[in-house]
Length: 301
Image 1 (cartoon, rainbow, N blue to C red):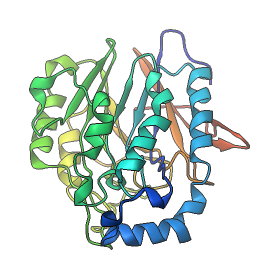
Image 2: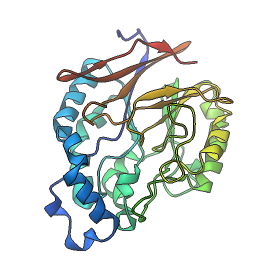
Image 3: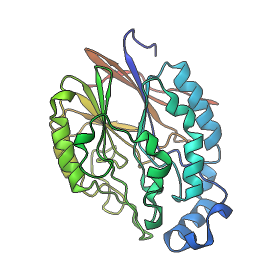
Image 4: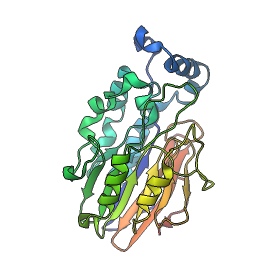
């Protein structure tokens, strides 16, 4: 779609899942869940993400050709949350961070896979976690608030946590961030702006129903209750590897899941045009050997 004159164009991507050869994982890091995750990567998952680096290079061309101003990524840069993966992922996505109005992100559950990964994301992605309103932080670096020009705000909350239990991959937004989110969305400095609230976990599935307790956002209701005050905006997430858009009763803001932007046969992304009196969204995916829009633009209400 042609970029409207004067519009700010925003790209939403997610779940890139860069991996590295397993020999780069220290022997001491293979205990418990990571051992099972490594086996799954070799036997099943890896075959769906073999072209990640190639696809991110194509994605770099896509955002530049489409005139994207701002890139938002909702986490899961890695598979096992190792130091080698996070270092590689930070290098792979570097071109995306050159968007003129910036790059805003959150970690995903794979980036803090097990307890030994805690703090690594901040070490490698810390330069991307800056906030324009540091006085509104309530939980370390979070929430993050970016004021983009005069028309957009991005509010990022961290829902990712380690899940050492092999069969659990759920997330939770800490209570201080939930409380802080409510204050942020009512802050006068966000008044009149289109607000993107971004987090990793999906508050709802494409059906409009909550995800399971073992896979989803366990305090999704509390999160959505705070978002109910949002008059103009959208809630962006990843985690569920299907690209979709859904409306939820009681919310003015729509939910947009980018799925995985790099998984074979499920590639997804969203492109938004923010104008003073109108916001449009269009779904994108992988077509042949490139990223392209795969759905007609529609107005976000």
